[in-house]
Length: 196
Ligand SMILES: CC(C)(COP(=O)(O)OP(=O)(O)OC[C@H]1O[C@@H](n2cnc3c(N)ncnc32)[C@H](O)[C@@H]1OP(=O)(O)O)[C@@H](O)C(=O)NCCC(=O)NCCS
Image (cartoon, rainbow, N blue to C red; front, side, top):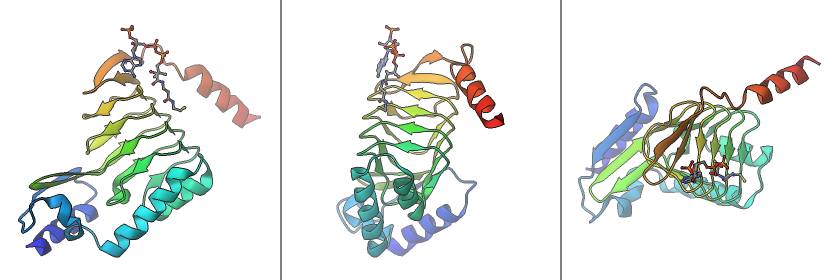
């Protein structure tokens, strides 16, 4: 039975066009979470959770980003990951964080979600120059558009449009930032620095 679960997960991981997978857990355990090893090889899981634990203790730095890249997370340049950010240790390869994004402390970035009888996997895409406030978490699949701001303690349970400010549990759009283009001046300054 668990072979069928593994097969579906493998196919999903390969097929980059699919955003989400939901598989009914066939048993025999009382909940799918206690049978996590039907989804991932236990040795691999030990390795990824070890790396994630190390990165939780490190300040934001390129060494930390490289450790996370090593377990499959796609991370762009100038990405700042604060201490205690928990990256999904079961499916880190489903997570993508684009250039210039800032993650506050104690954020949970999930690429899987297990209910008693169901396993859900989803791709997570965090755009360019996104700011995610501390203590936020997400329900996969999740796409956060470029330059979005996620307020502190937010539960991101749907996609966040680019240039928007979202807050709350569950998440709501508080402000559309398109009009004010709040990073325009900052990015123009960066461009002129590059030219020099
Ligand atoms: C995003 C953030 C910077 C916004 O701060 P700000 O620009 O000063 O915004 P304001 O405090 O003026 O709030 C604007 C509105 O959003 C609301 N709001 C702001 N943050 C909120 C939150 N986390 N949850 C719910 N509502 C929030 C305010 O109540 C206010 O609502 P109102 O206009 O109805 O009164 C701030 O909310 C935040 O998340 N800070 C944490 C930053 C962080 O974790 N950085 C990580 C690296 S250290």
